Length: 95
Image 1 (cartoon, rainbow, N blue to C red):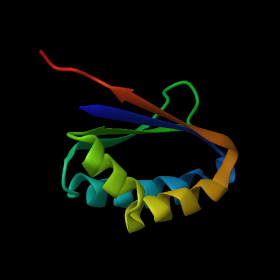
Image 2 (image 1 turned 90 degrees about the vertical axis):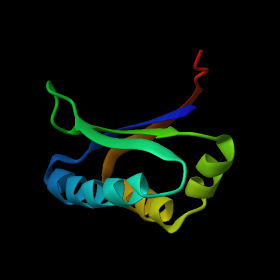
Image 3 (image 1 turned 120 degrees about the vertical axis):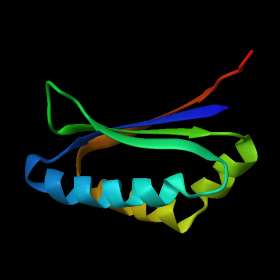
Image 4 (image 1 turned 180 degrees about the vertical axis):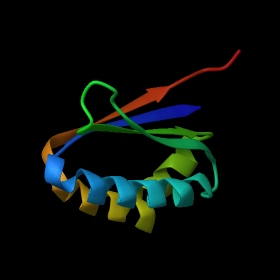
């Protein structure tokens, strides 16, 4: 399983716009082949810190997602960020 964490710091005046876009995308991403989960979260201490958490079953399906239209839209929405986003990839082995 591959875990993807995308951390974002959005401009406060753009938070609603970005949140709506990502919430819609998360629903579509959840339907992609190999997506185990896609959750959109907000930091409780700083409402301008947002997170997208994705779990993928295989590297191949994740690579397909990273080339998808959904991911292109997500990358375009990142223009509303206050600072560069941080994307982390973790490979998790299940026993």
